[in-house]
Amino acid sequence: MAPGGDSVLPDEPAVPVHAGPWQRAWARFRRHRLGYVSLWILGAVLVAATFAELLSNERPLIARIEGRWYAPIVANPSERALGGDFDTPTDWKDPFITALLAKPGQWALFTLNPHSADSLDYFNPRLDPAPPGAGSWLGTDSRGRDMLARLIYGFRVSIWFAFALTFAGTVAGVAMGALQGYFGGRIDLTLQRLIEIWGSVPELYLLIIFASIFEPSLLLLLVLLAMWGWMGLSDYVRAEFLRNRNLEFVKAARALGLSTGRIIWRHVLPNSLTPVITFLPFRMSAAILALTSLDFLGLGVPASVPSLGELLRLGKENLDAWWIIVPTFAVLVGTMLLLTFVGDALRDAFDTRKS
Image (tube, rainbow, N blue to C red; front, top):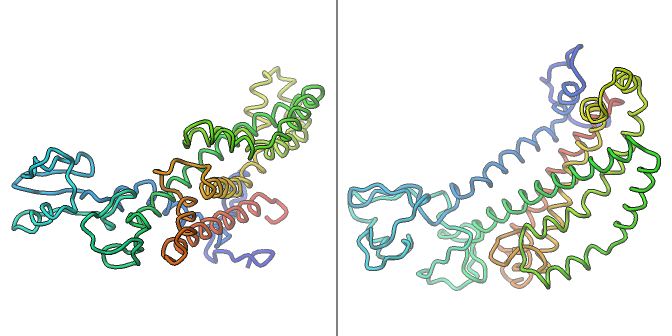
């Protein structure tokens, strides 16, 4: 057991004597079983969600019909090209296509879940929302869309939005904190007052105003949230720069005549990233919750874009359809827990007092 009761990997090798600070931090991180395993799970789920089209799609991966090969997942042929009457994209749930694939020598390889996020099965006799069954493993929503498909695609939207918002907020926060901490004096005082003024602006009111003026979009939401998402991190970076700027190696760099930009980039910044790294998982959690909350209130992404908040709102509107809200809530809570475990492990890994 690690200090504080954290479980560790029993077969983890000792940290090399001459290892650098990043190697030592990585070795300490790997000794935390919960955080290390959570990171692998998050990585696997992220890869699966990124390539969601290969896991959940109404179009087959590959098909062979009338001696010709097709890759509908890349280029969906028209129904007329397959012998139909209409020059429209093929609906692979159409009885004509189903009967065609049932003939000898005709086949198609579908994904594990043969549904897309917005696909509708017009030939399904069940009433919507329909409970889980053989055709839909997690049932359908009130509009007849497959819940598993919308959950996969909605998770992808939420997690990649969180990555983008975290990246934008981190870059802005590090830049602002570096300016304040390294130069200090009037620059620090002026920027501190400006940050206090900007922080007093009611963010939620502005989001509501912009949502009523502009068409909802992920880019607009990303820009609006990023405008405030950097302020908390900049304080920690500022404190690190204030501490590191007067250390001996920085004074030596100045004495050698290195430029201010090079001193900041090569010497001060790498030694000031500990709070940035340890806060990344928690900032991602906050970004996911922000998007989910705004979507739940109808202030987030367009209605056509699947997201966890939109699914929670559908669950609220259909309380008798438990298969809508329960899996969505489980995915949201599971993601928050995994990010929290990774964040705790990172915090302990960069805490030299626990090394």
